[in-house]
Length: 147
Image (cartoon, rainbow, N blue to C red; front, side):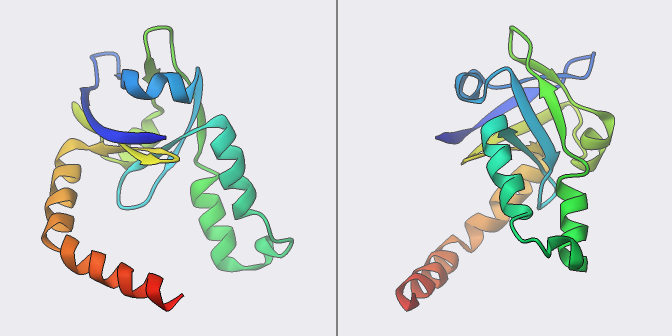
């Protein structure tokens, strides 16, 4: 399970070191794609196969404008990235720009994926969620009881 928060820097050659905690679980090749909430998603290859399979599960998925748009966004911009022997990876420019990654980043483990955030954006997001965590828990609890 991928959990935890780790802070790293992008080096002068635009390389980023995958946290050691995630390296063993993720392997030598990962899939990086635009995520939601202004971050990038990083998947293992096997998890990516599951995600992409769920996105195209319906024969009619290409007939729906919403499905086509989201598939183009998530699948069309995805990239397989090699992780070198010391855990570094080089992200394509279009993905770095998408998440506004600068010198400091936050890796966040979210069970089946890692999210990669601009450090300042992550800090702002956490502050926002912390303010409403109790209300979110209450809402989610009610929804689960209704099921």
